Image (cartoon, rainbow, N blue to C red; front, side, top):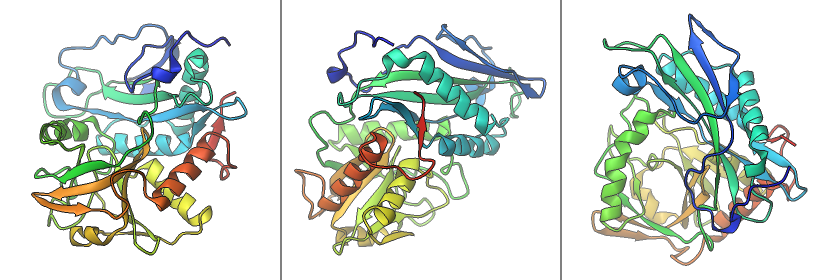
Length: 341
């Protein structure tokens, strides 16, 4: 299929309308078979559950063109699994995992012309999401829901290479103990908006959230998990029931152990030990890894030995290996790559 006339090299990380999106509705206790549609607008009641009580969950993944010219997606089974957990937590009907993957595949196939070519640095971002669509005025779950998948071509998160960022320790809490921090709900991101705008106004790129219970342990940022490297090359990731289980982070842990032979610890990370790490990064779908060069804790500054110029050496190996797997330059573990075409 002939590609769209898009300046792939200069794409930003924003929304570009593509030709088709998948839509399925839940009514009378069952999901319909769903369909690909052209219309990108949604009409719902002013009293819809999503508008009144934020009953919405979502996922994010990407389609890539590999070195061999194949179009692939990365570990969609984990996105399906996580959406199921998110839906259950917000009392929403589960969209079956096999149907989730099928819907993602069909949407990518229908928008093949928007999948950026290999070597452009761009990818096709995929956004599956679900929301309460029927009217709800009392505080209770909606009775009807809509599941949708849309795609949009996006440029590389970092143009010209990933430069280390500066983050601050936030005065706000991201998630309550036993709350919704471990699911991908829209409400979690809504509460982080004021904190990130405030951080940007103060000259920082992101926030570091500590645990709400004791404010002594590292949790995550508004949209990414933390990854630390010790001075002897060990990979350490924070563990908490209120951290979103990042698919990128879980993949990097496997890459560290199985490809690079590194020791990995998934454990509680106390903030007072952060100063002793050699490298720090934020990991997520958009950027894979965003290197962190400096953390500001209310005027007390932690400067990582890896510096503010480039990714640290271990972080770089992790980044290169995982992106090599995604782009087909390296063999992938079984089940990690779903070939579309």
